[in-house]
Length: 75
Image 1: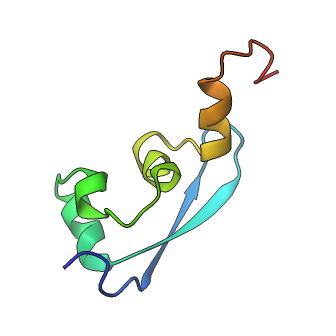
Image 2 (image 1 turned 30 degrees about the horizontal axis):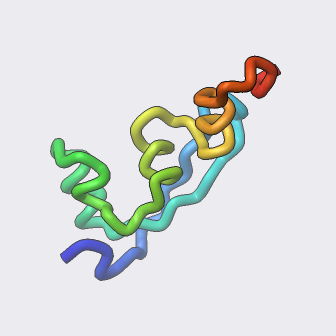
């Protein structure tokens, strides 16, 4: 079911650093997500960083800085 044919490429730009990332997904899984299924259920094969990119348009590097206890991490 999930991830059988990861033939669709999605281009997502991080809202913080503006870098683009390409994510390869199964088109059927993407459709399930677009129809309301949570990304982690629709595409369980995606890493947490890639799922966060779908959810908040924030890449893993920026997410780590945003959640850092270091006040200078995002200066």
